[in-house]
Image 1 (tube, rainbow, N blue to C red):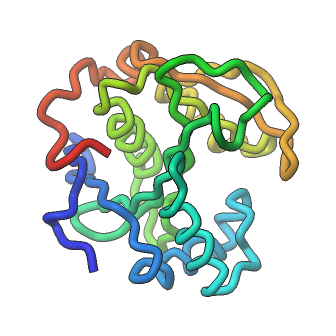
Image 2 (cartoon, rainbow, N blue to C red):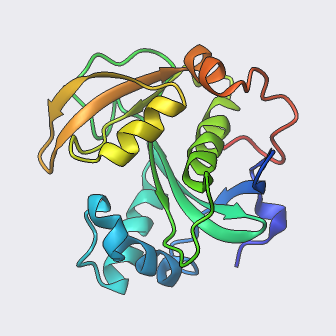
Image 3 (cartoon, rainbow, N blue to C red):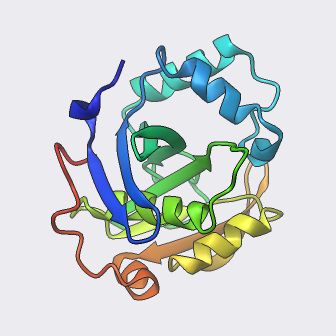
Length: 202
């Protein structure tokens, strides 16, 4: 089981408190993830029908992949979101756009909850983006959400993403969007990420 010593990144949100990111363990986290990815609110994650072994296998595959990583996000020490990072020149978008040095692909999923906190999802995506940009090698974040996922498009815009246009993937029609380090800083006011990381860079 992961502990606080495994935390790779921390950020304190002025309104909602402490957020952090730790590595995902495909075995110990599988049951938690199964509840998240099969929830009705996770329809766009496309794992609604997944069994527990399906989830274990998927995140074992990600853990073993050279160009794909998965993390559990915590809010006040409790699991609250899923974060994935990938190399878009090797996965998801190969042949669909012209990658640049420093491009990093991202997926995130907020855990279902009974008592929504105002601004929580925006705080989560801000944390995810800050964690990615805490790596000096990251110059631009690339996302490809379903074109129908208007809620995520609005969140992406709020943290600085600019749509490039639709691309056709095998599983969906996606809205390719980009966010540079400078666009993220302008949208969120997080102009310096110094001091936000603890432990190794993600």
